[in-house]
Structure formats: C-alpha cells, structure tokens
Length: 91
Image (cartoon, rainbow, N blue to C red; front, side, top):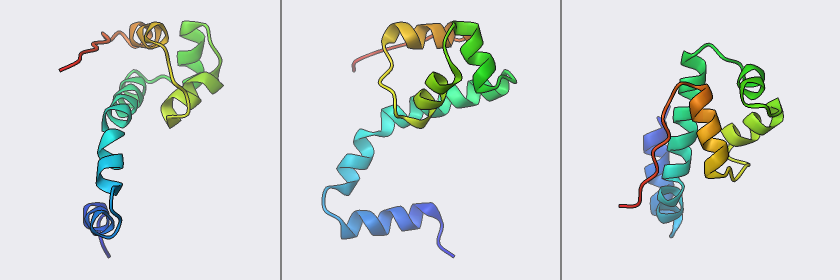
C-alpha cells in the first residue's frame, strides 16, 4: 500500500502544473490545520467556537473546510476565542 507522499509525488510527475497548484494552496491549508488543532486542543466543538464569536456553526465548518474566504477581522475573532494570536506577514 502506498503512502500519501508516494502517491502525491507520482501525481506531480504525471500532471504538469499540479505541484504548483498544490503548493499555492499550502498557506491556506496550514492555517486551516492550525485552527482545527487549536480548537480541538481547547476542547471546543465547532458550535461552541461559533457561540464564543457570535456566529453560526456552519460558518466555522465552512472556514475549516476551506470553503470560506474569511476576513482578517473574522480570523482575529476566531484567534481571540481560541486564546491565540493571529499573525499575518508578507515575506
């Protein structure tokens, strides 16, 4: 059975442009992973997090699935509710 890394590398070789598209999504998926990890470490459900920031559970679900282009203000609310700090940079 192949692991994901092997499968991914095979696909990159087969499909021109796939690696670039995959890497372009990296920062977005990393942010999502950090949010989910922090929420779970805090023992919060999506509903509980939503309640803390005054939104609906579906907004948190869309954010965590990558189907929501959140504003900086919204991300700041989420970070504060998770006792975290939002840091944005352009390098």
